[in-house]
Image (cartoon, rainbow, N blue to C red; front, top):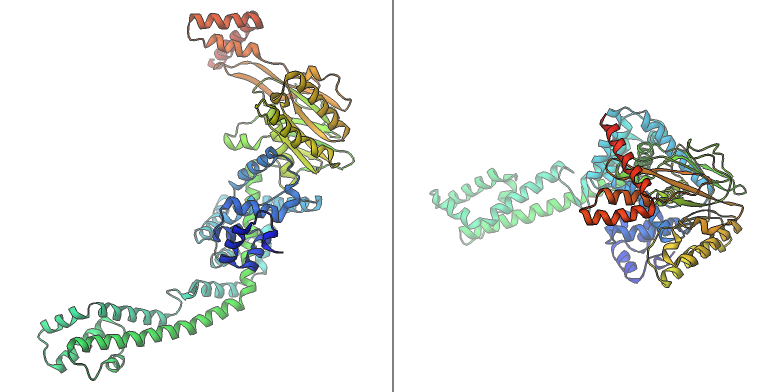
Amino acid sequence: MRLEEYWGVGPKTRARLVDELGAERASSAIERGDVRALTDAGLTRGRATHILRRATGGAGMETLATPDAREAYKDVLEVVVEHALTQRAADRIRVLTPLSTREAMAGRLDDVFDAVEIWDGLDEAEQAEICEAYERYDANDGTEKAAVEAALELRELDHAAGPFEPLASLDADTLETAADALGAVDGHRLGTGADDELDRLRSALGAVEDLDASATELVEELRSEGVHDVDGFRDAFEDRILSETDVTIEQVREAMPRDATDAGDFVAETLRSLRIDLQERVDEREERIGAELRATIEESRDAIDRAVEIVDEIALALSLARFAIAYDCTRPTFADADAPAVSVVDARNLRLAAADGSVQPITYALGAHDVDSGPETAGTPGQERVSVLTGANSGGKTTLLETLCQIHVLASMGLPVPAERATVTLVDAIVFHRRHASFNAGVLESTLQSIVPPLSDGGRTLMLVDEFEAITEPGSAADLLHGLVRLTVDRDALGVFVTHLAEDLEPLPEAARVDGIFAEGLNPDLELRVDYQPRFDTIGRSTPEFIVSRLVANAGGRSERAGFETLAEAVGREVVQRTLADAKWHDAAEGD
């Protein structure tokens, strides 16, 4: 495949990749999903990631049908990346995409939970040893030598199951020899330690070059020591070279000129001849030893490549396992296409959990689910495929949509989900649309162009639409939203529509219901107390009395307070007073 045929590779990117890698290596790096190869060639990490996502998982990326769905996908990946063992594992996580088949998802889940079982079964000391091995791997930039050394270290830890099982197929002796050869060869040059004789010759050459750099001072120094006749100067010069360089007396005498005109010429010619002789010896030795070492590397190529692959696969598997354990994730169930459903029991929003860890778990379900009942206050979810979600501002409605999107995206990538239990139906399009408070015809048109076509294309769709009414007039919004709900039902799609216009949508189609989230008052800090768990088949209650209560309590002066008390009369003075009294009671109860 030609480079320019890959998504995102234009003429400038192609030219850069060809210059740095060559067309064949660049194409191979893209097919392998190798972020590092592309960034080493000069691409930014973000651009490399975008190219590789499309190249390795283009079909899966097409299921993310809206910008908000793609943003939720990126947010999920960044949470997973935080648990990566290596930078290379982090790069590989960033290019994971929704998979195309249920079998592929199940296979990845099998691998992740094999790794979860292994990692969870290790004690802290064993986990630390593995992390330290990968820290050394990362510190050495994940080179082939670093990978081979990591493979040898991991073999010595004697973990033979799950992701570690392939290590048993590696031959330790071959890898040790390869590691030595890789360590000795640094690009086109041999490093220090590659060969003792080569190191000795280089040291001798360096010493001679140092003497040559101060040849004039050396002549003066020898003369100042009282050496003036030719034989005495020759002997003193010979002694100085032998004492300060690792060359033989034969080499020195062979280098001395027989026709030098004066002492300076004699010293310069001798040192020049020594430099030429030593440089030739260094070059000859380096070429011979280098050829031997490169031959060793080539003979070990299969073992090296296999070690690199295994070390990276272990790092990826353990990184995903660490994520799953950190968020108490479980294996999702995939519902049959002829009985579509999406259901979660005690689901947690990853973004909130990653931020502070304090998240109220949510149970929610649509379609042919098997959730017997929700929490005590919620009731039992019906089998409707579409819901209209209502309730208080700041009540977690958008977060619920985001959570459902996160769980569907994770499941479609073959990754564990942050819920006690979750069931999803694989869909052709995830339409996630956040609230965008831009009130103009252009935004309305672009929004409809974004969310309607996936419903009309004939594939299975999951609709997660937040406060559609924010982008057009209330009357028109209710009509359009009712049309979207009806279209979702007619197309056998699954969907949740967040709105404050539920009462204006009646009558809903038979396959749709209304759920609600309720605010419960103010806490002692006068912050809204909300039960984020939706109540099924119930319109959520708005909270103006709670907001007005807070404004009355926080009023900055008498006139300001009087203004807010006028609003309190409008929403119900008794309700406002009761709200403030409840807040004080909770404060006192917490003090006790």
